[in-house]
Image (tube, rainbow, N blue to C red):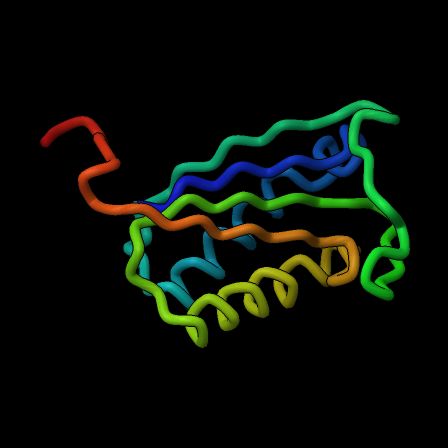
Length: 119
């Protein structure tokens, strides 16, 4: 049950939040093998000036940052995580969201760290 938090500019949220949510969820299904009904997303749209980032850090040309934070149970190897990252940026591209503008952080913990309505 990955928990997804998405931080993005208000105008990007207003234009594309449904499609962004769908794209990330489809990437989870394809790359992480989660069930289709395992969707937990929190969008945090930000006004101009609220997202601070270096537009050239690490030699990348960033213009409009979209931060995707994923919290998941520790069960994915490096190759699977990289497939997920690629699946996300591939699905966001048609929305006009460039791979250079996406920052994904996947943090893992144990099954004992989750409660999802029942034990």
